[in-house]
Amino acid sequence: MGSSRDDLRQFPQEVRQPVGFALRQAQLGGKHRDAIILRGFGGAGVLEIAEDHDGDTYRAVYTVKFAGAVYVLHAFQKKSKKGIKTPAADLEVIRRRLRAAEQDHAGRTSEGGRGGTGAGGG
Image 1 (cartoon, rainbow, N blue to C red):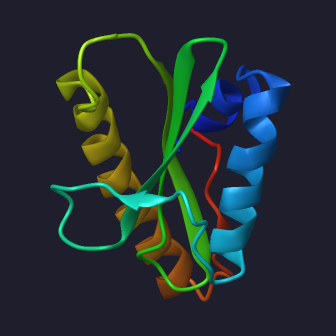
Image 2: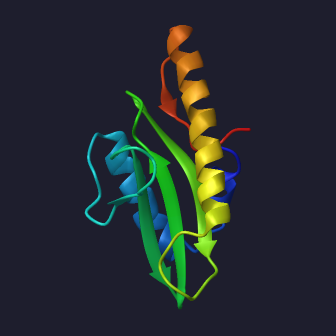
């Protein structure tokens, strides 16, 4: 959703590979061992995978709330060195994109669409 696909492509290769693997596992109905449920989003449908590389932390947040679809909601490099909490601005991006994913998925299913991976797009 949004710029997530492009943002993910900006991650170092050493980060993209495990994140991509986690997303593929989600597409196949599984859960990566390092994926954690992101609190504040009403259950187990929003997950986060975090990877450390060269002293930086990269995060990808995705949802598996919708049958047949995995939407990448946000991919970002955590800037703050203080604490592990996801910054409020990033949480707002995730909330906004989750609403967009809900609308997108509803449109796909009402049109007899095929679902799929919502990693990119507008």
